[in-house]
Amino acid sequence: MEVSLGQKQKQHEFALVSMSQLTSSSSSSPCSPAIARFGIDSGTAQLQFLHEPESTEVINVDIGTTQLFKLGPVESVCITVDSETSSKKEFCDWNFSEVLSDVCLTTSFLLSQKSYSRGITIRFRTEDESKAFHCAFEQWKNEVIGGSAGECLENGSLLTSRSKFDNKIEAASAKMYFHYYGQLLHQQNMLQDYVRTGTYCAAVIENRADFIGRVVVDVGAGSGILSLFAAQAGAKHVYAVEASEMAEYARRLIAGNPSLAQRITVVKGKVEEVELPEKADILISEPMGTLLVNERMLESYVIARDRFLVPKGKMFPTMGRIHMAPFSDEYLYVEVANKALFWQQHNYYGVDLTPLYGPAFQGYFSQPVVDAFDPRLLVAPATFHTIDFTSIKEEDLYEIDIPLSFIASVGTRVHGLACWFDVLFNGSTVQRWLTTAPGAPTTHWYQLRCVLSQPMYVMAGQEITGRLHMVAHNAQSYTMYLTMSAKMWGAGAEQGGILQTSSCKLDLKEPYYRMSQPQAYAWSQDQQPHQLVHAQDVVGPGLTPPSQNSAAPLNR
Image 1 (cartoon, rainbow, N blue to C red):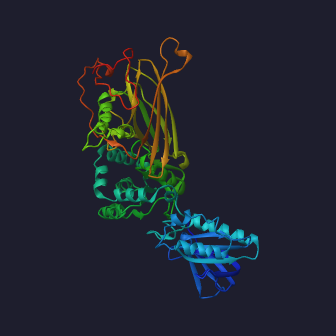
Image 2: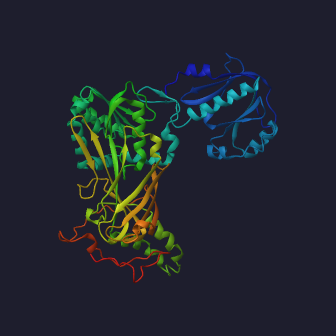
Image 3: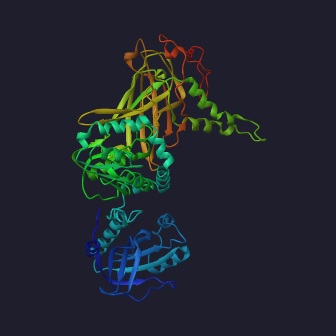
């Protein structure tokens, strides 16, 4: 949102009957008529108090560190925190409701906290004017302050709106995220994923008709490789938007390709914040994380669509699908469970560690496993959940609910849910898929498996139902809630009912990077996966081992 400072000032100027500053003597400075004016000074949202319209004596108040409280229908007090002695959070956490009975008591309270730098009392002519001022204050505080308030971006635009990104992502996570992607070694890791890079290149070049003479925005451009592909395909101009320090490397790489560089502009900033001089005909991006949605960059991709893409413009990629299927892998289950065995020691330097065995056991099972696995470990045909990038709302990505329903192909022990994803580049000439499926060439995304701490036994033909519920959190990832149930099987199954249920809670932000290549299982073509499973049962804390009459795990 571009803002004319003069317009803002004219719209948000208020006449005050009186204005006085609180002093350390619990009294106020002399009252006199004044003007309150909102504006931006040196990139910071400010509230200015002037005794006369043309007065050179101006009191500037930083809105970001100031709270406004009503003392009465027409009287209020502005209190500014001292940033050197108290954090904003601590300041906002104070309970002022019991200390704002009068100005003197307010002053005494602030002095006792030793964390204010200024207190100003203001009086309006009418209650309506007081309400209007409070509304304006909240508007500026909510929409103007923040990390990007008044920031002069490199493309010359002034953005004064606090972006959605800053509102929903914690600062520490964002700092680590942009630091990670600002390093060339991580960009190299992605560039050397030849399945990824080659598919993007093919999707662009094979669909030159979509790019020739068109304006392209590269969302989260990184090294700028996709921008260069778009220019190779004949794009009229490409805006490469990158928020991390990688933007400088992208400039250098693009400048090193002069035949393309004249049609590419690198814009450093978040897509939620930057302003571009023209709309885009095509968006191109690589917004996929583990399980498609990790890192929550899909939301930025959708925001870029809403801000920059012309109606009926194209998006590369166009849609994504999360695929899921139950799996059986005794080796993996035992490996995860055995990680907690450390906590079963009764005499670790004279200390009994066993009280923490239970939490440790559950903790290891709260980590999704990222690796490449053999597709023959799947015990039912996969299902998928579609996300259409061209139409989905950003808010729909905050919470993703996927019902599960499978028919077991074999009788075996189900250890959890395997997941992977693919994306479609829906070009006018060629439709091309990029897949991370097991059995396909391995990518840097690998696959993901949610391992149940309590496996379930199923028979061939038995129905497996459940739910995968993912809730976004402010560390740029998701909390995953998985429930899987085995329904009644055989005679009487039509009556319904659940025989077994197992559930787990996982944090997609904290996976176990196993990263192993699929094992070369030595079985013949006519052998079924469930015939080859062999491992000693592992019983976690609070779990019951299978009885003698239960179906036993089958040999591998």
